[in-house]
Length: 383
Ligand SMILES: Cc1cc2nc3c(=O)[nH]c(=O)nc-3n(C[C@H](O)[C@H](O)[C@H](O)COP(=O)(O)OP(=O)(O)OC[C@H]3O[C@@H](n4cnc5c(N)ncnc54)[C@H](O)[C@@H]3O)c2cc1C
Image (cartoon, rainbow, N blue to C red; front, side, top):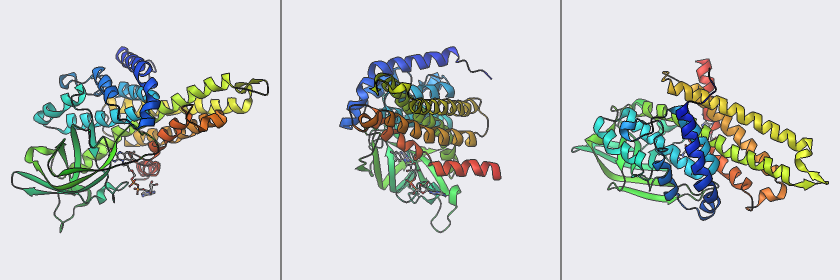
């Protein structure tokens, strides 16, 4: 076991951190206030190779590995959580197409995602009636002349209107012969596909500069070569993608919590009450000590899961779920303590503490709620 970063990993962290200090941290409050999609910031990340950290150089990626990706995500989320989630989904989509796509599909989409020619990628799994249980999806793709006809609704799709390409899941089994998880397939949908309508833009508690939309598919035609992976193999692809995605969201939670923690330390040193800095009070020190401990533990869990994925072990679902569960739950506590340390000033927008608390909340919900992570962990021990 080696806790030292490789030269490549250190370089990725350094370039992400420089960008965060120069461009992201100064912009984050305004992006949040104006709920402005971070188009320029995402282009900056693409220039640094951060839209394809774990994607081969031949496809325009940085080919720096999963650990480098997790570390970069921690840095970017420390600067702006909204930019970070958009980066996370784009990296995930690039990886899914790289892994399951044909050479033509890879060439058509991945270099555009990594270079920033596509502003973002989108991952369309959830539906109004199917969140924790995606097998309950009803969106269907029915065989038509030379392709597939898609009908249905998707819900909560990050970057749904901005994405140059979307990975879409739909039922491909016959209505009278439902095959459960084995009747779902995966498709690539280009931006502006006819029959795809962008619905409601969600007005969110946090991550306000990221885009979350619903999508309606009405007789949307997709050609044969839009099928990603094998027919009826889509659920497996989704679960594999989510294992990796959970490492990204754990890292995002850690990044947000790191920002909150660092700011709380600074505030505790500056703020005086009873004639001394509040950092001198043991109650404050204990909050900071608990936060530092949880941050370290979350980092270790997350980097362990990242290392397993990097080593290409066949399954790392349990470790990814542990990382996501522990990092998101502890990040929530860390951001809450940071706000508490700011007292009344934490509750208003003069400081970033309230934004961090709003932003971090969703990490306990998306890419599988904390309850779903517990199901994955418990099943892996009991089955
Ligand atoms: C900002 C945002 C961005 C998102 N981005 C995307 C995206 O890009 N692509 C995408 O496909 N989806 C996306 N999602 C959807 C997200 O993954 C779902 O919201 C999540 O999986 C939960 O589904 P749900 O909201 O339908 O809740 P439900 O599944 O209805 O769950 C409601 C509650 O019941 C609990 N619950 C459900 N089943 C069980 C069970 N068996 N045991 C115990 N408790 C259970 C849940 O944990 C939760 O507390 C996004 C969501 C948000 C909020």
